[in-house]
Image (cartoon, protein in one colour):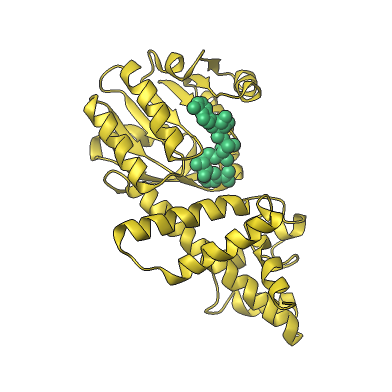
Length: 295
Ligand code: NAD
C-alpha cells in the first residue's frame, strides 16, 4: 500500500480521499477549509499542517482543486518538497495550457506526472465509480493506474501531457450541446401537445437517443433518477457547465478550431447562470429554453 498525499478535499476530493483510505492506503490530506480537513480526519486520513507538509514522505500526490491557477500554485509549492521520482496526479478540470505547464514543472524536478480529470460527479466520487481521462507518458500512466482504480471504474490513457483535459472538455462540450438539444425537443413537444413520455419512448429508441435523454432526462417522469425529479438539485451544477464550456472555447481559440454550437451553448448557459441559476442542475436549462418562447 502506498503513502498518498491528497490536496483539495471539496465535494469531489473529500470522498475520493476517503476511498483511498478504504482501499488501505496511508493518506495524508490537506485543504484550506477546516471543515473539509475535519471530515477527512473522520474518514481516517492523517491531516497535514499545509500542502507542503502533507507531501513529505509521500509516494504519490493527488490534487483536486477548482481551476488551473490553483493547480499551478499548489504544484509549484509542493513539487520542490517531494522526493525525486514521486508521482503527482491532478484530477481537477483545468485548461489544457495550465495542465501542460504543470507537467513541464514536474518534469523539471524529475517527477512522474499525470493529468487525470474525471467524469461521474459527486455520486461517482462517493461510489468509486469515476471515469478518469489521463494524459502523460507511459511510465507515469502505469504508475497512476492502480491508484486511480481505487477511486474509479474506468481509467483511459488518452495520450501525452494535457490529453486528459482535452478529452474532458471535448466530452463536456458534447454534453452541454446535447442537453440543450434535448431540452428544446421537449419544449417543442409541449407546444405540439405531445406527452413527455411519448417523446421519450420514441427518441430513446430512435436516432435522437443520447445520454442527456436516456440517463439524465430534463423533464420529470421518464428517468426517475434524473435531477428533474428532484427540483433540478445538482447533480452537475450549471456554473460548472459554464466553466467547462468556457475551457472548451478557450482551447478552441488557442488551437484554431471553430466550434459554433459549443460557443452558442456557452452563451446559453452563461445567460442561465447570470439569471441566478448557477447552482441549478445543468439539465434545468430546459426552463431557460421554455422562457425564450415568452420573449
Ligand atoms: P470544490 O470547490 O468543492 O473543492 C475544491 C477544494 O479545493 C475546496 O475544498 C478548496 O478549499 C480547496 N482548495 C482550493 N485552493 C486550495 C489550496 N491552495 N490548497 C488546498 N486546498 C485548496 O470543487 P469540487 O466540486 O470538488 O471540484 C473539484 C474539481 O473537479 C474542479 O476542477 C471541478 O471542475 C472538477 N469536477 C467537479 C465535478 C462535480 O460534480 N463537482 C465533476 C467533475 C469534475
